[in-house]
Length: 202
Length: 202
Image (cartoon, rainbow over all chains, first blue to last red; front, side, top):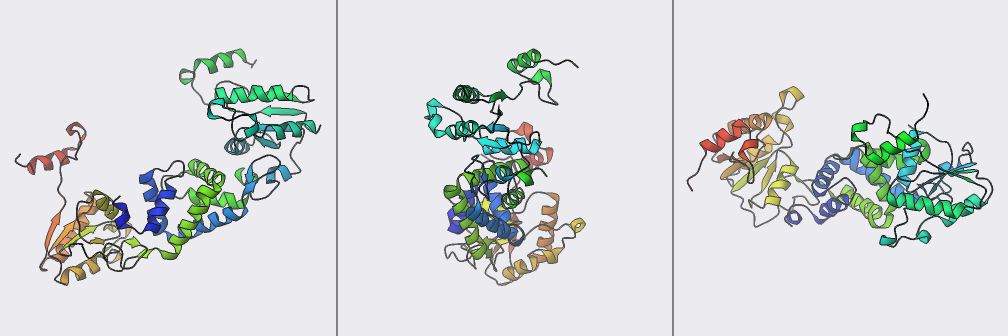
């Protein structure tokens, strides 16, 4: 590649690593690398430091499976969370999304993916056993399955429901319906059918 | 911000710094940070190292003004470049683009921007004096102005042409015309007029 001649291998490597970030392709990785180099003191130095700190401190919470700089994580350690409720999510990104919405003040349990036999992902590859353990403790009264409404997500939700039968917990799932601000014309039939079925009195 | 409660300040700082990269907004910065943390050994550790190396080694070439890990840069130090030609570009990104095209094997001169009186950018803010010096050395026979075809770029090109009058150098500029693969229907009138005017015999 011609690029190799024009910049040193160190810059080339920086570009190649940046290109592996989601949302950045080869072209935008070059732009990002150039921006980093140009704004060395304001951007490159602090970002290199922040990454060094992340390398040293970030890990997975032994209790819920999220990532944080402490173990147990800030959420599991928070005494103000309602421990009678447990919110089950597929991924850390989903946990972050729910926290941004600030819709619930309960601890979480991160599965780390969904069941996918085709990709060789079985129950033993997800944090399901530890979820059952947490529900067995007797502290949890309700498990909210905040799992994506995809085929894999729903399969995983069904599997978890099966595993939790017999335990003294109520299992609930997120409501289906019209997204706030959404236009009916752009929604799929499945969502519309669910929204009609679950209609509420005004 | 709700985000502060859910992740430690170290992760929050990483997200905020990533969001300042071109091409990444707040949302994609979160996704990038999460990807970095999840792929700690494969992505975060090498990227942190690459940035540390860049902090330590990258600088501006005293001769041409590009960024590289050596000074003079790899291009200025390359004995195979044709030193009778000097390619003037606005920005390092333009230099990289020309090198990727591998269209010319000559050294460069990076202006570091364009004249813009409204933004307070005058000739003394650009590497124009050093360009005149290089042309005075007698080694340069042709200066190619590979400057963007924008109003500011063309103003800058005219200013440079004025500064180089009296010196024994030919000043040329890139050809205007239809981009290779471009459709006439989508081109502006100015480009079409230039392409017609500069038509060539086939």
